[in-house]
Amino acid sequence: MPLPPVHFFSHGSTMMLGEESKSATYWKQCGDEALEHKIKGVVMMGAHWDARGTNRIDVAMNPNPAKSPVAYVHPSKYVDYKLVPDLPTGKRIVGMLNDEGLVARGNETFDWIHDTYLILIRMFPGGCPPTTIVSMNARFDPHLHARVGSIVAKLREENYLIIGTGGAVHNLYRNHWWQMLRHSDNFAMPVPPEAAMLEFRQSVEDVFVRNCRAGMKKGALVNGVTRLMKHPQFRDAHGTDDHFMAACFVAGVVDACEGVADSGCVLGAEDWELVNMCNSQFTVGNWVSQKA
Ligand SMILES: [Fe+2]
Image (cartoon, protein in one colour):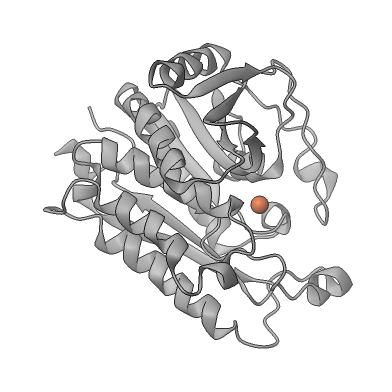
């Protein structure tokens, strides 16, 4: 049975929900492929929900989650989309995390945020698959988040699609907001991105693509991705750590899964937004090569 690929997606600004882009087309393509292969569900870590406390991770267990509203997107693009929380899988994940020494608990009041449902709407416009959202931890330790990925990784063998949704280059303090606020144009690039953003974006691509190929040492992707937080341009590219945790989570999933990295990582699509935000979409492994 072919096993699912693993995605690290950069969700960008809220306008990525309402505007067409290469990323949106790619997300839909990934969703179509997942449905063709009859995924059992989706497991996601986003960038907007963190649990406070040492080693604490929350898992979304609200049976009827609302959607937090999103700015600069017409409500018709999201208000009627029905979210489908996967409570049995959520309960299982709480158990899996606790068994490995984390302090996990179900959260029955959490409402979903655009970092996750933006991606779900774009991937699965015809209907949300059963989905489990796993929180970040508020200390933003990259290794802890990689570990969370390594613990849930085994769900991939049951045909769950595992997704991290954060950002490759995502610093709201460095974005140029005027074109969006004045003209609703999130893709305007009146000037080129700053050098630090270009440099860090390239490093993210290099780390993902070059550490995912046959013959790489076990743990190579986690080592590379977590070390990116010590990159000289990391703080330029990420004013806060939150949007990089999903990359660490994905790296943990990949390194814990036998063989997925051997079939490579592709940069499936990319869009620059607001001058300095780079929305790179990475997929490790693929359905086709794993049929062999
Ligand atoms: Fe975000």
